[in-house]
Length: 405
Image (cartoon, rainbow, N blue to C red; front, side, top):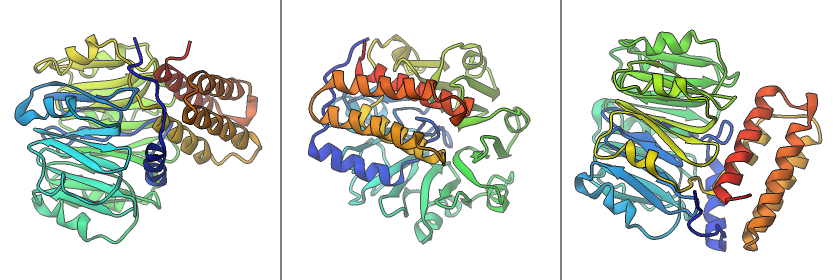
């Protein structure tokens, strides 16, 4: 694997990433990715719709594979600039650049590409999309199926994440509560709305919604036609993220392993479950699952549409954007709520890594992240095993994206 170019954040990049830090959601170094509706995802370093897959290279450039309907693959592949996250819909691709502005290609929802908002997170559905802007408000575009666009746009609450389906939309408030709008034929809207638990992430697809509790448990509502809801709810495991596909659900455990439930007609469940690798992200689609490994490579399972699976699997490049990964790592550490001097020590290493990148010192950044990792390993009882595993996996992912030896 190789790093296309050294990652050196300019002042412009740093300004954009400061906006990103305001509202980005992380559980571990995980940007939650969830397939939505007939095909879509939430923004992250990798996202798949089942028909096309896109990822952010370590140098901030985009690469996509799969069905090139309306240039939703060739457009991102030819884009200039650097991007912090990417999301894919049925026939479109949108990415958030380092200035936190949205760029879209293909048959994207009306208004998305001309929005003047700056975004911290973005979700794509089959023919609609929503983002959380830097004021923590929701901004949605496209077809208003059952109020799934107009409802979020009318809300004055503060949010940290949004997930988009074909006929409903769910968003995670900054308070940790979930609010949903749209169709409710299977309880996919009323279930989350009635919940009094506190959550750190969510994902929706078709008529199913899942969320990660602050305690690490998963709660799902809605259609259970393939046992995906029952399986996830009864797993008894703790997770850093969850992603809902067309008929399956995949959870990213805090240990870095994947655990999926539901429809497995193309190996989109059994493939991830059989893997012994560690991962930092997961994206489930209608008949596919893709994930970002700790070594910064991609792995996908399921139905291959025009190389949407084989393309990522055959790539020797490395993925994940280190400046954004470092911000996510710091947010994760601060989110643990540790009452010792350890968070200040770990945050100090993140600061050193960022400073090194700003000075074009890749070796210095590698050294700082290595020291952070060693500190976490040696922290003993000041960290739980889950917390230690999340920090180690995140640090290993950053070092892989940087090309550290």
